Every structure is written in C-alpha cells, then in structure tokens.
Length: 100
Image 1 (cartoon, rainbow, N blue to C red):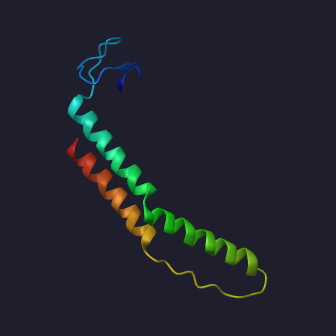
Image 2 (image 1 turned 90 degrees about the vertical axis):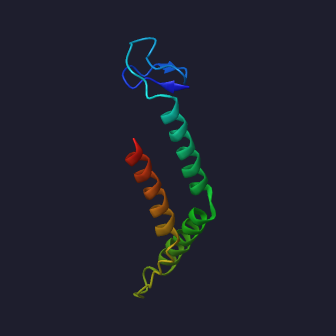
C-alpha cells in the first residue's frame, strides 16, 4: 500500500491516481525501490556495526562517569565503525534521491 502525497489516503500500489482526491501517485516502480531501500537501511541499522558503535559509546560514557571528577584526561578513540555505517546509509540515500 502507498499513501497519496496530496491527501495522505491509503492507495493500492498499482494505481496511478488517488481514488479520493485524484492526485498523481508515485508509481509502483518507485514504491518498490523505496521499500527495498528501507529494508536495506533497516538491515544496516540492525547490523553489527551499529551494535559495536553503541557498545563503544556506552563504554566511554561509563568511563567518564566513573572517573569524571579526578582531573584525568580521556583519550576517546574513534574506531571508524560508526562513521562507516553512517556513510553507507548516507550514500544509499543519496543514490536513491539521485534516481528520483
């Protein structure tokens, strides 16, 4: 199912025009492409890299909270995992927007 961009009513995927307001609908090919992109992005979010990044963030927060008042300086190391997963998601969205 797709939603009309003009009136937000739910439509069948194979329709070209909204049955409520008559506005044009995005089309089946675009909807399938958007769904596939959403599935790919969701799998990236559920993937190992996001979990590792979250884990590293939690470790850093715990270290700062545990030792924050003793005057020590902390060296926070960027392992690049978060940056890589963010770049992949951004590039995927750029490709999607370029094709529209």
